[in-house]
Image (cartoon, rainbow, N blue to C red; front, side, top):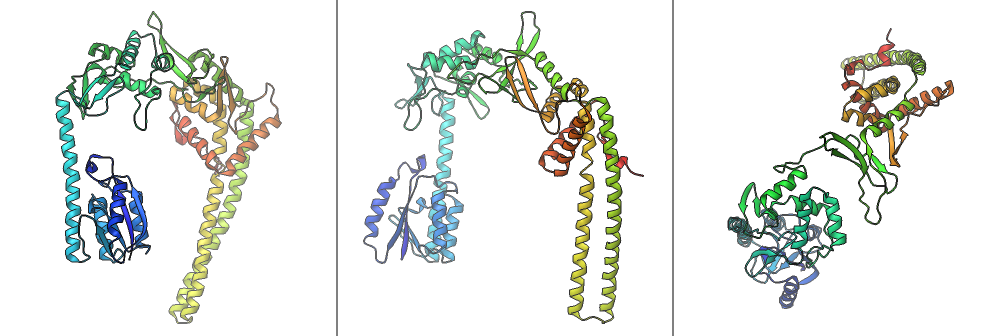
Length: 538
C-alpha cells in the first residue's frame, strides 16, 4: 500500500515539545522499515501551525490522495495532521468514503473501522482543546504580565527583552539615540523625516539583529511609530486598557503629549488637513510626489505651500516651495487656455443639435421599422399556436416553427436595445462642450474637492519644476491658440465624437466626473444637464 510520510512542526508554543521535522522523518522511516506492505511514495514536510485550516502542503496531500496517488498517511501523531475541526473532519470523511484507506502513527494505533475512527475523532478533539486552552493560558499570562507593568511582546527599539528575568531593560546602544530623537522632536524645529534622516545617516541607528531580520536602518514609518508609541512614556496599552509600565521611560508623559500635539495628534486622534493637490503633482527634478504643508507666521496667519516630498536619499532635491495661490493661479491659466471660446461654444452646440436631430430622425425610423417587424412576428407566433390547437400542425412542425419565431423575437429585442444605446451614445457630446465652456467659473466657485476633481478631469501629467507647473490637456480637451479658427473647432468636435462613439471606459469615467461637477455645483441641477435627444424632440 502506498503512503505519504507527513512531517509537520510549528514554531509556535503548541509544538515546543514536539520533535523537529528531521527527527520525525528519521524516526518514522525507521519504524516504517519494519512494516509490511508499506511503500512511502513521498516525504512531505511543512512548517505551519495546524490550529487553523489553510496549510498548503497538507491540502495538496489530501487532493493527491483523493486522486489516487496514495492510499494512506504516515505521521508521528494525529495532532500532526489536525488541530482544528475542519481538517480533522476532512480526514475522517476521506476514511468514510474510502478515499483514504489507512493511517499509521508512531505513538497511536489506528484501525480503519468505526471504533478506530471514533477514537481518532477523540484525539483530534483533544488536540483542538489543547490548542484552545493553551491560547487562553497565553492570553491570561499576557494580561497578568501587563498588570504587573511589563510588556509581553518584543521590546520596541531602544529596549531589550531580558530572558532571565522576563522583563524589559534599556538597550545601552540604542536607547540614548531614541531618547535624542524624542528630544529633537520636542523642540518643534525638526520634522519626523529630518529626525529619521539624522538618526539613520548621521548617528548610524540600526535595528536589533535577530535570527532572520534586523540589523538595518529603521524605516520612516518606524520613526512615526516611535514618536507616537506611549510605551516610551512608561505607559502600556492593550485592548483599550492602560497600564503603568515598570520599564525606564524615555520621556515624561508631558513631553509625550507635547510631541503628539506637534504631530497633530492631541489625545492621539490624528488631525487631518485638506490639501487639494497632493498626490497629483510630481517633482520635475527627482520625480517624487509634491506634498502640501501648512505654515503659520508669527502673527498667526496660516499659509499653505506645496513642495517636493524629498524622499530621495541619494541626493538632495533643490526645488523651492510654492504657495497655494501661485499653484492655483497657474491652474487657472491652464484652464483659461483650454476653455472653449464663447463664439465657438455656440457654433459647436448648434452643430451638435443639428447632428443629434438627424440622428434622432434616423433612430425613430429604424425603431418604427423594428417595432412593426416585431409586432408581425408576434402575430405569426399567435397564429402558429392556433394552428397547433386545431391540430393542423404536428408536434415536430410546431416546435420547429415556434423556435424560429422566438429567435426572431430575440433578434428584434437585441436590435432595439442596440439602437437605443447607439442613440444615447451621442448625448454626452453636448455636456462635454458645455462643461468645457464653463471651466474657469466652476473652478473659482468650487471648494477644494471640486477644484481637484476639475483638474483631474481635464488635466494629466502634472509636473512642478522651478516654480512652473506644467499640465497636459486630457483628451478631448485641448489648448486653444490665441486666434483659433474653424479648423481647430472641427478637430475638437471630431475628437469629442470619436471619444463618445468608442463608448469605452474613458468616456464613462469622464461623464461620471462631469455629472458630479456640474450636478453638484451651486445653482446646478443634474437634470438640467443638456441632453440632445430630449432637446430635439418634436
